[in-house]
Length: 330
Image (cartoon, rainbow, N blue to C red):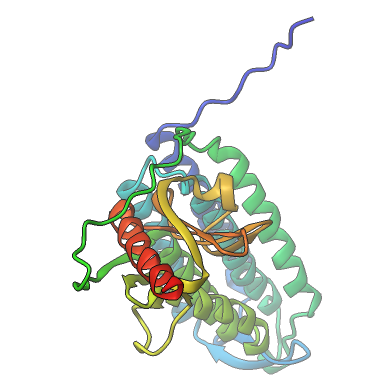
């Protein structure tokens, strides 16, 4: 009997924008509803920061808390919406939507719990938020992210293309040349910004120890969001553009390179995400789907980097690799 199941087609940009806005609208409605219900029972100022053990150690006026919370919701929602408008057909869009769901839910949970914890407090300094609330917020964020990824639908399928022909650059024997490109990832910039905002929010409203994990994620994501790829007589080098020129993510010398080529890279299908990725038999630095350079190493592994004009970079790298072998053979 033939199966009646059919593949779910990718959603268009407009439905995805509506879906992406869903969690932020839901959080705003929940926040407004809870505030309306408890507004007459709230002290002023509110306990808005909680230290180790959940005891209040920071306070904000009711008006200030409402203003900051609403501004944060609108900012996070605007960042996600802008990204969807800039690259509506990018394969990474479903995961951006999932990240928006997770961030909106975690942020909304934190501010709503803050309001409920302050209701009917006779002594605002005695307000406490149990530590298990923090764990529950991560569970809520994880479930919301999974829901967002499901609602976002399938990513556009990357066309399968054969590996590009390996070529050499016609470079005179005594001449040297260099090739360099900067690659950037708007989704990773947004992810780093969201993590930074969430970390600061959790630190301010809950505990800096609790927010440290989110801030660490931002510190890791933001340097990876823009990288300079260089091919020269020393080999292949990847260095973050936001840090010192002496900082490098990776350098592969010529003697470790067997051959280089170019082909289309499917970011999530092949590597499961952005950044520095490691898979069986290969690794890569992927900030988007599209054109990329594939370097086959002498140990049999592959190293992949997504970058424009990858064919030129691979040809120059092959030329330098041939020269290095000729010198060793001589």
